Image (cartoon, rainbow, N blue to C red; front, side):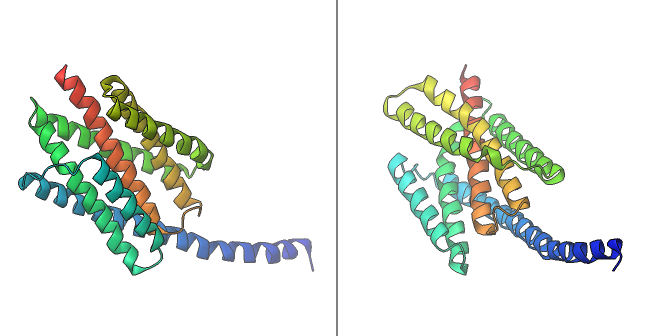
Length: 228
């Protein structure tokens, strides 16, 4: 058999084998962004309901227990239809906790403009970073270790800012989270593209948490500037 025929015989199975992988990746991307849009909408509805009913914030401890509890259940049932229910439970709960926060900021001078600015900036950052990762198809997996350590450090620093009532540290934590959540959006989008994340439920949760923390961090920073 000629050399070129041998090469074609080798290359064809490889090309054919890449088709199912590409289709699977596209399916994960499509399902992730569809579910993300639905959960963001549901979270916005629960936030609006929380604001309209003037519900109090559940508090730091209940928020942590509710978040990590629902996150655990979502992860536990991520491969079943029950996982979808827990995704909406998690994002709905986070929307409820966001309602009283938004209510407080809307009561500030220029509050509506502040909230809309934070919302617009969050949307622009998410769309820009996601679009860059999708179009460039660069591999950002190298950021995984840094993001894990950074988020842990920022979380512990945030606890310190709450317990020791340190507004300066709280602002620094918010700035850290803006950078870390931006990096997490790049990392997770790249992870989906390159097959590192094949479960669209977990991909949705990661992106949702990134957007939620990015928005709350931005609104905290803008709120501080507005008070000044």
